[in-house]
Image 1: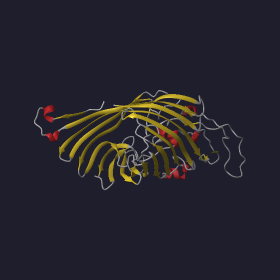
Image 2: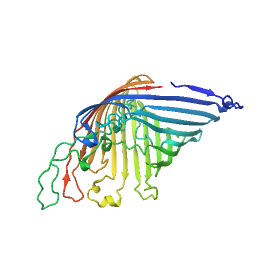
Image 3: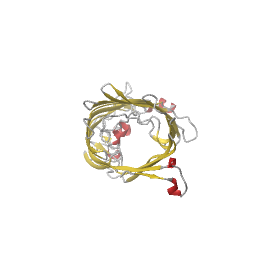
Length: 416
């Protein structure tokens, strides 16, 4: 249940206060549970083996179960201070389960811990939260994000692609007699193992992290944001981000536009900054036609990271990618606020290795009779392609082919 309260500081601390010190508090959250059916998705230890169909009871990581509490307080006319705490509380995350682990146990995820000051000159935010470019590649009018989210790996991400049988090895050097063909050991797949998360990703500008962020007042139809902070497992990466977002009226309807850039400077072992920078850049645009409810969304985001000198000279590692590219298109139909449909296609090229492609094609439907309830269903097919690669010696090469993974998900999201 959402509620707002106006509390005078005098009432809390028994001291005099002016009306400018009025405090408003809001508590809310949601529960989002789903049933996920998977065909031909396997776990890391038994790649391509075991049951080819599974059913999972999951928390939908497209929009996970969460709890939040926030407060704002007017300081003077036009100046407001506030804070927000948001915590994810869920079990069986939809991007963690696989056939060997259908129950992943409870998880607490600190999503946001922010304090902010909103003024006529812009908004200043400090704490753990979204960087300036966050979600610039996820602008979307379709209304189907709870099931057809921009990052396809959040549903089924830990499932592995099954390998099709193929001749496992052959000599790649000229003037050598090929060895006898050996059966490929699917339970020990070497460098051919790949999950949905390892196959496709939308590169969302370094995600949430500890930072200081500034958002400008609207400049015409545009808001400009900048942020600086730290991320990484130990907070060792320095993150700089810039973002531009806009919502505007255009002929026939409305349009959302986002563009962003982030740079992560990797600090190796917290001692130096000699790791290669990771640069992410791109954006998205979404158009909604007012008369028909048809909408079209496009996104393109790139992630660039140079190979280290050691990787560049190694035969096997030289196939590592220096530029991952995500492309996405969604066609939606939203005749009213109750119903929303979509069909979408997305692909990531060179996610890990050169000449590989992870792709998804899917459909989604969301029923929203009120603002506090969604029922949804969707289906998608994940595919992965990888070019031939060779071991460090160059004597043994592989040309793996993968089975598609089919996922069908349906669930309920209840907000409070």
